[in-house]
Image (cartoon, rainbow, N blue to C red; front, top):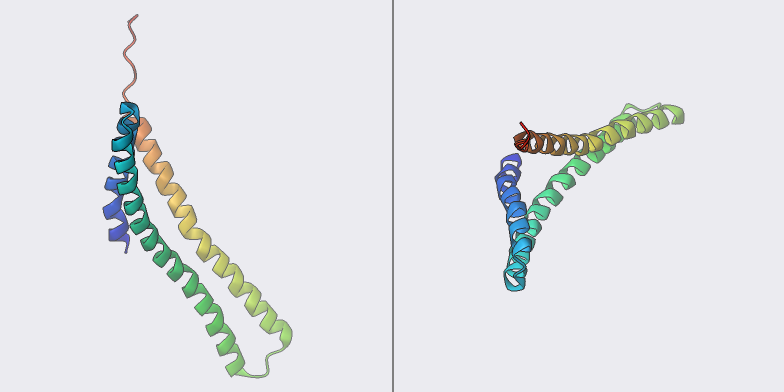
Length: 127
């Protein structure tokens, strides 16, 4: 799954650069064609992200259900122990859900940093 997402990344970067050049040309037909193509790529990428995030949400909830089932199989559990179990499981689930969001933000910051570092400083005419 990660390989599939990474396969789209160079295309998206090239797509953004192409978008800038097409907008500068002010050709409406070319812009419309480009936007149609890019929307198709974004739909495919959205489908992949939907599947990925679906798994990310499904696994932690399965963890909570498993904990509840395992606790009920033990017997003689007080209501406060079940509440503690659900609360701790939910905190773990929240952390598991936030991890991909944090990783995505770090990846974007890394990409922005590389792009900024790749920009050549302007040549000063006074030197």
